[in-house]
Length: 311
Image 1 (cartoon, rainbow, N blue to C red):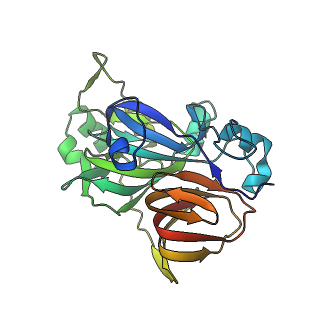
Image 2 (image 1 turned 60 degrees about the vertical axis):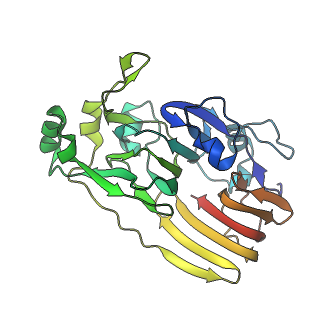
């Protein structure tokens, strides 16, 4: 067992709606001015992050999950359960929905469904999300989709930096243009598009998934109020953002030297601002790493904003 935090190599994905803000904001080296996603902690086949330090350097996160389960508390399951990504939406993302585990297992080759949550890292003034819809049932939803009544169907929500949203499988949603988010989700890449603004990619309309959308979308829309809990630390603040079936997510802001009591679960940590140390490890804005299950308590030093997640 290693008592070291595990740094990972980021994997970037070019997207029709992507931009260059991941470079502007975090200083990442990008190969495309249409970079939409940074898969920061992922063992998914579409982006399996290599390890950058310790004796496992060069191995992938999926290899570590399969071969060194003690690092993760010997959790059951064939797949690493979470995926942490940054999303730069220079343009609107498609309106979409994700299936739950049961549907994905039955109709998508045994894959996981996708419940997710979003922390708004940055956004333009007036930015908004699509979060839910106004159809009273599936029949009305289908009718509004077929008639293209998007302004009547889609529920739009204004946003600002620091907002947080929980998006269970079955929720119609979309990230609006001018928005950068940190997403914590199940390790799944299943997306059903319902509306894509009639955009072309390589001269063709992108595929829609209306039938599957109607299969899995919640109707009517259900709100999920969050019970945020704020705890004041000696040198900072700990905010519990969500604690649900698939993950728990917290935000920590520190201003000095702060001891954190580790609950014994492995943690995924994203540094959103500042620089400093976690014990002897130098950490700074844009870093993402894993704290092993048996690491124990640790000390954070510096003016830092961290998002921490675990199963």
